[in-house]
Image (tube, rainbow, N blue to C red; front, side, top):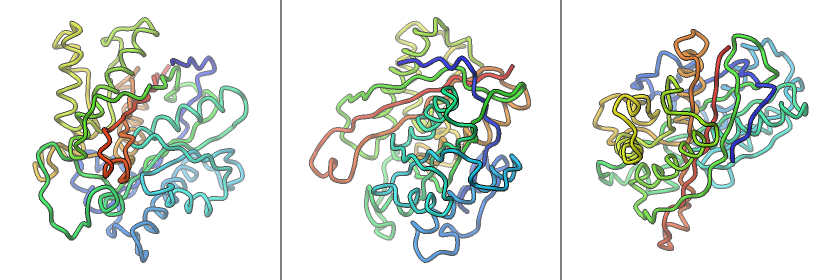
Amino acid sequence: MVILFNTKPSIIACGSVAGPLEKKSVFYSYFDSVVEDERWNQQTNEQGHAMMIQEACNIIMKKANITNNLDIDYFLSGDLVNQMTPTNFAARELAISFIGMFSACATSVSSLIVASLLTELGASKYAIAGSSSQHNSIERQFRYPIDYGGQKPETAQWTVTAAGYALVGKHQPNLPSIVAGTIGKVVDYGEVNPFHMGGAMAPAAFDTIQSHLKKRNQKISDYDVIMTGDLGKIGLKILKAMFAQTGAKQEELEIFRDAGAEFYGEDKSFQSGASGAGCSASVYYSYMEQQLKTGRYKRVLLCATGALLSPLSFQQGESIPCTAHAVEITVE
């Protein structure tokens, strides 16, 4: 389903925060804040996770010269911890009308689409949208205790500690503006390996991007960049191969990029790259925002991908259903 935003809501400001290991990211210089303690000097990983979310939102309000939280109409956010407790606790402190969002790692974009809808309808003057992840809390929930020391295959990806959020408001000239969004379907190709998220999610990304281009009557080359969320190096290769089978030329395939594949550069200690709900969020709402604001890019398609599994579904032998949501952003 493609949604057109006739009023073209704008991204007014962004906030991105990352953990200490994320200093190794190629996007490091674009993050607003990088801390030395992954727990944010709190007693638990989850408490630190909540602090990270709050800090990113406070950065946004400072950039936008908003001094009162009550001036923000909605806070739309999610994470990967059970019942999104870090986000819930952050929302408690922010005291902004809260809509919890869960599209797994696709939440960075699904929340942005909902914020844009609220703005389009005139129900919101300002809304904060985004997502986050914290490595230790996510890894121990979905796989095994961090201290276990288990080896990971080359297809595995590293869950980042990062948060990325955008402030969405009415259209403003020369700012990145959301002109369309595509709500993806749930696609399941039968992948059961939780260490091969890229392979599981690539078909969903392909389905959403292809649907967006078709319904918008567009070509791949109409965009400066089509950036997926966290397919990783292997998942990105699969996505490109799927589009190559449709007749896409090599120069068109070069337009595809992936935040997870690029996040840690060529450092092989991170296997296939980065993942987590904070991966695409921190890249989209830092690096990509800056490329649009500086005029390097005029039109981009951001397509965040999410694996909709849980520890329970994995233990029951279920396959991994996935989804992908996309937003078309332009600068006029």
